Image 1 (cartoon, rainbow, N blue to C red):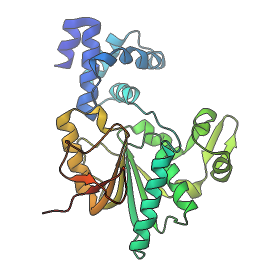
Image 2 (image 1 turned 30 degrees about the vertical axis):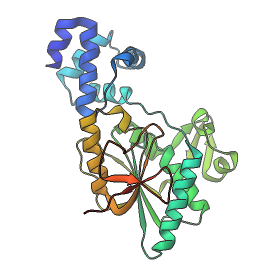
Image 3 (image 1 turned 180 degrees about the horizontal axis):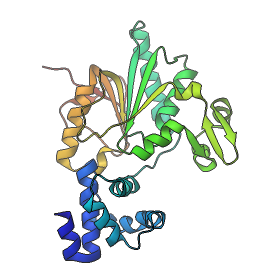
Image 4 (image 1 turned 90 degrees about the horizontal axis):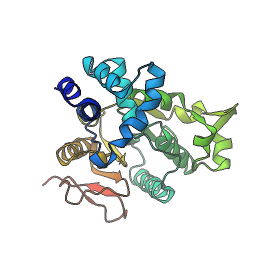
Length: 277
């Protein structure tokens, strides 16, 4: 079907086919008002692959929708915008909630899932915060996932540019947890080993095994249509403990979207897994 779109509609068909490929693989949609982003994002990929046009790139990707070219197209179109300590007040609240949960159940190792972690700044930030509050990997397990193989590979390497390291990261934390070499900074293994980075597709994969006390899924759901969003909420609900907490992005909410989560009365801005009837 995607191949027919390209053949019949030229460049517009190529953009539509690439959008369809992205949605099929990840559930994410590109709004018509943002279709311009396809050309802008894919131009560097054209140069890297030595392909002359978006039309030709679309044809290559559609001929082998699970091949390396299609993977590269999908990875390029995914919005991997992230930074260290993004929305710091919210992350402080999350860390406070985890400390409170640890105090309430001192003998149990808590579990956190950072879903849609991109290149890893969110879970690394959280690991730093928890260390500052006296919680190490023996007290808290962090699982971080993303649909992009490239993003997860970068997260595991824990290497960041000077620009990336300066976005949100205080100098004292940079000096405590990162080693600089040339224009790159690498997180120390003592920090990285606190996190299990895995590739995971929120749309079609089952959640990571076990139950989670805290799930962060920030600025991911807004790229999904209503049906996919509802399905993903179901996946998050299955993964959450009966009293588990959910963290969404500033422009996201559970209200009117799912019956599985409700606003947490004791943690304003967070959501609690609704108890079964």
